[in-house]
Amino acid sequence: MKPFYDLRPQGRIRRLRTLALAALQEYELALAGLRFISDGWNYVFRVDTTGGEKFVLRVTRPTKYGPTDVRSEMIWLDALHRETDLLLPAPLRTRRGELFTTVQVEGVPEARHVVVFSWVPGKDLGDVLTPQNYASTGELLARLHQHAATWTPPDGFAIRRNDTVFNPTDQPHLFEPAFRDRLNERLWGLLSVAYGRVAEAQAELWGRGQSPQVIHYDLHQYNVKVHRGRVYPIDFEDLVWGYPVQDIGLIFYYIQSRDDAAQLHAAFREGYTRRLPWPETYPGEVALHTLRRTLDFANLLIDEQDPQEQEFIRRFFQRTEERLARLFQSA
Image 1 (cartoon, one colour):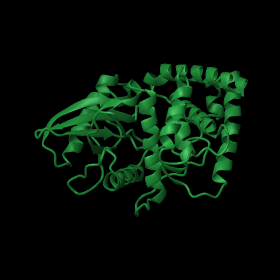
Image 2: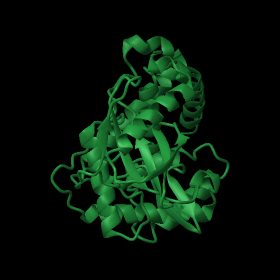
Image 3: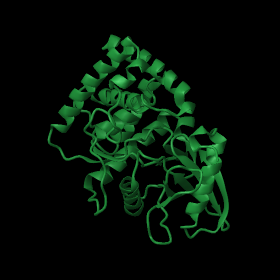
Image 4: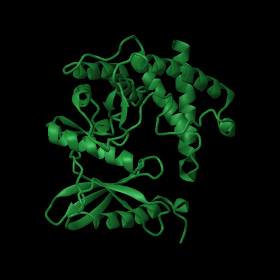
C-alpha cells in the first residue's frame, strides 16, 4: 500500500473517507451519504441521514491537537449551544456519551480524532464580505467575549495560554539554524524586527494583571457563515486563554491586503461596540496582534515537509517579505 503522505489529494481523501465511515459507527445516525467538503486544514465531510438531517464530520489533523484540546473545544461549544441563542455547530455525542471519538484505519498512519457537529447553513463570509456582514461579525465576536468573560469552565477543560510570540500550540522553529537557508537576509531581518515588537506587546498585555478568558482565536472570514442576514461562527479548534484584542488582531490579518480594509475595520469596530467597549488600550495595539499572526504562520510553515505544500510556502514567504517591508517603511 502506498504511504499516505505520498498520495495525491484524492487518494488521501479516499482513505480518510474510510476512516470517517469507521468513526460514524460510534454515532446513532442512520447514514444515507458521506460527502467530502474541504481539506484546507482538517478534512471535513458532510453527513446525510435517511431522515433528511445534515451534519458535519471533521477528521482532525494529527499531532497538533490531542484529546484534551478536542474535548475542551467541544465543552465550550456545548456550553455556548446551551447558554446562548447563537446558531453554532453543536457537538453530537457518541453512543457512549463522548464528545468525540478516536479512530485508526489501515492506510492512514496516525489515529485521528473525529467530531460530528450539527449543520450550520449559509455561505462563507469571505464570499459575501460586505461592511454590513463584517459589522455583524464584530457583534458576534463581542457576544462570544461576553459569554467567555462570565463562564466557569468545568473539570476537564484545559487549553493553552496565548502569552507567547508564536502560537502556543506550535514549537518555536522560525529562527532555528536548521531552517536558516529558507529565508533570505532581508526577510530574516524583517521577521526579527517583527518578533521583537510582538514580544514587547505580549509582555505588556500579560503584565497588566487582568484575568484572561477563553477566546476563539480563528474567527476569520472563512470560519463565519452568513445565512438570511445573520452570521454564525464555526471552527473553534484554536481556543486559547487570552484577551479580546488578540482575537481581533488575528481576524484583521485576513483582510489586510484588501483595498477596502479600512472600511471593513471601521464596520467591524462599529459592530463590536454594540455589545462591548473596544478593547484596544493604545493606538496600534490591534495591529501588533495582526503582525503576530504573520509570525504564527511563518513559524508553522518553516519546517513543513509535505511536498504538496512547498509552492504555497514559497509564495507565503514572498508575500510576507513584501508586507513587512511596507509595514516597517511606513511605521
